[in-house]
Length: 258
Image 1 (cartoon, rainbow, N blue to C red):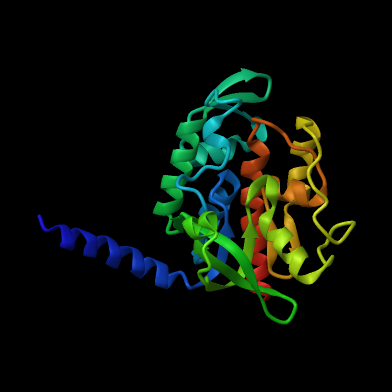
Image 2: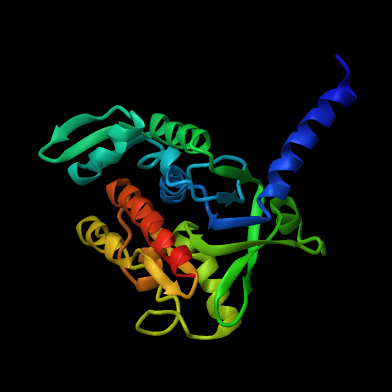
């Protein structure tokens, strides 16, 4: 059992996948529930997709459930997605179901990888590539470099479309606004910012807000509601799952049109 051989096996395997991800159809920033669902449905359609997650773990806020009670609520409309993934759900009242948050996110992650999507954790999307007023890729660095504020140049991935699934902060949309000015397809041209919690309205708006907001840039999940100034929802996740699936549909149309 040679330690150097172990190190070589890890390095060669990772590097092969990472180099292959330098050119993809869709690059997704954020491996929360909406980002993973988006990646799954893209990979299911044989779209080459890579997900970049800045944190050590995937899942965004889902593993914490509601206030560290690792349970989430999902409404009837999103149940077909849970059934496709094989995630257990128990009816609570009317059209609401209780789901184990850890089972859900671990299953989403596993089945998304098995579908062929590549997920890279501990990598931060710090900028975008823009060509002729269109998003053409993302700029990456190790999360540790960003956290330590080291002066280390990043590297770029080229893609036909980028999905901002960075959650409440809508980081990719904010980068585009900062670099290009108020050109986003919102009322103000910029990121409006999420409003306070209102689950009913937030859940209704998230699908409407899941769309292309700049040529080649799609928003989904809480990033979509933050960009368009809609409320946050709390620990109900049906809209997040449906938003991820819709984002995959939008992304496919974007790359076909390109």
